[in-house]
Amino acid sequence: GAVVSQHPSWVICKSGTSVKIECRSLDFQATTMFWYRQFPKQSLMLMATSNEGSKATYEQGVEKDKFLINHASLTLSTLTVTSAHPEDSSFYICSASRGLLYGYTFGSGTRLTVV
Amino acid sequence: DAKTTQPNSMESNEEEPVHLPCNHSTISGTDYIHWYRQLPSQGPEYVIHGLTSNVNNRMASLAIAEDRKSSTLILHRATLRDAAVYYCILPITSGTYKYIFGTGTRLKVLA
Image (cartoon, rainbow over all chains, first blue to last red; front, top):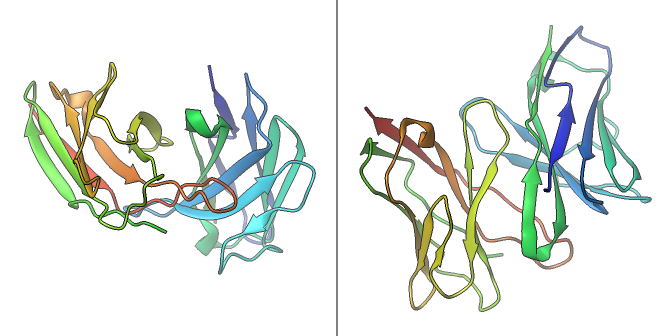
């Protein structure tokens, strides 16, 4: 149990366009999901906390208008990178939890390349 | 928030035990210790977690020091598939329960 699916696994887009990444909890409901970004050879950096039915909470330094997060249901959160630029190229990873005792399950990640 | 310190990298021979240390000297009494690992180009996967007592599961063992200021993840027989970055995490529990990742330990397994 506790499977988190992330889609797409990779995407290439042109500079200036927007890209949407989906994160789904397949066999459990998640009121809270998290979005991370990871640059090559670096650790995961928490970007924001996605809350079902309310606004996301962004970490310091993360532009909320740049990275739009929607958590419309208990099983789906989306991250939209708006007006993407080459510096937004990164590995984006989501996570969700069934509850405190279970820890968090991570998606397989989305590699975004902006050309 | 309690922080963790891990060596940047370690090497092990295949089929030998590996001990991955983590220091967390500012841990509080209610902080759980979680370990995850990340294989190349994948999201992190859960390895093990504990509070005070040593823990065992099919993947690994977790040895927690009596004062809880450090812990050690033990892989009993390393395989090539265990080559990954291992993260020791103390979840933040004030407000939303969340993970902040440190630099982790990159484990290299030699055939």
